[in-house]
Length: 189
Length: 243
View 1 (cartoon, rainbow over the protein chains, first blue to last red):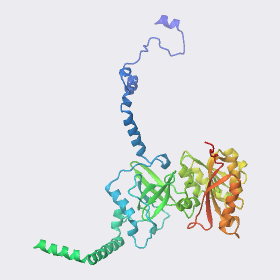
View 2 (cartoon, rainbow over the protein chains, first blue to last red):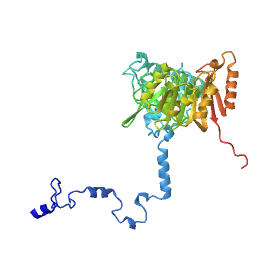
View 3 (tube, chains in turn red, cyan):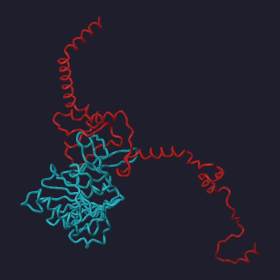
View 4 (cartoon, rainbow over the protein chains, first blue to last red):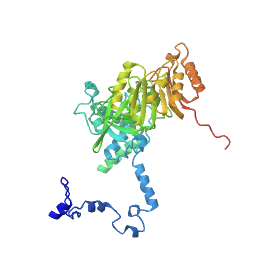
């Protein structure tokens, strides 16, 4: 020890020549990194990269699927939203909205079928809005259909129209209607 | 349109633009700065799992570009990622929507001469990193050459008698060959005595003389009176005839 310290008289350095600088066996950082590597197995013997195991056709299909899952960068990757029953009903209502309100005129409908890429959102109310420009807490619903069902005026109008339609149908299809009535009676007996 | 009501948002035909469908339809753009309205416009929030995104309603009565889109213009030539030179930015209301459309990878050079409205525009540009505000006279494009690069599209809404010349001189400086221009022409500002149609035709002639080839013209009729939007291409590549 003393001999060694004479040989290397480095006063202010902290170099411990006796300490073994072997890699600590508990230190498994390298192993951890190698865990993700694909080169630790007999990679060279493999016929094909396991990552690209799918055939060329399958890869192409996969790529197309990924591409179709969004609308693309031109529309900021709008996602292909999953169609639920509620959303589907909302979209149908939007499609037929010209009959919702008798006082509202709509131009020719340009909606063709159900959209593929869409999002469901809500208007944000700002504190500068007047009361008439926002819905009350009670009026707020999670879907358009629910909003309509909660609207008393709409329901009243809808009921009236439905009744009118029914009466009209009875008048124009008088014979068929009577037949149906008779059948009903017969079945009751 | 009431706060709290539901809408469905769909992509519009033009890249970067969306439609919000509810009881009433509205043109919307994806808000670059969620949580903030620029000029008190309505916002629509969409929750997609964890991340929230926001759209801003674009009023065609306040913006000539929105009016042109609703009027059915064929192309606006400002897809996400493009660079746009916007002459006559005013308070930056339409500029904010253009900045939404071109997105974080695009750029909008917004030129405005008036200090009063330029100040408002500066405030818009503070929040939006893709707007470069320029308070300078658009008649002298060399004065802001230090701030500029080549652009893909020039949009002009300057309402000056020499509008065609202003656009031409800016196109010569900054518009790439085959780049496009979109100009809104206010007939009253050019010649208040002549018929609007004659004024539009005269302006189109002037543009053609400057190698700005008009491709489309439409009036902004229900939204603005005696306004026209002209869309065209600058120095288009020559067509191959021999082959």
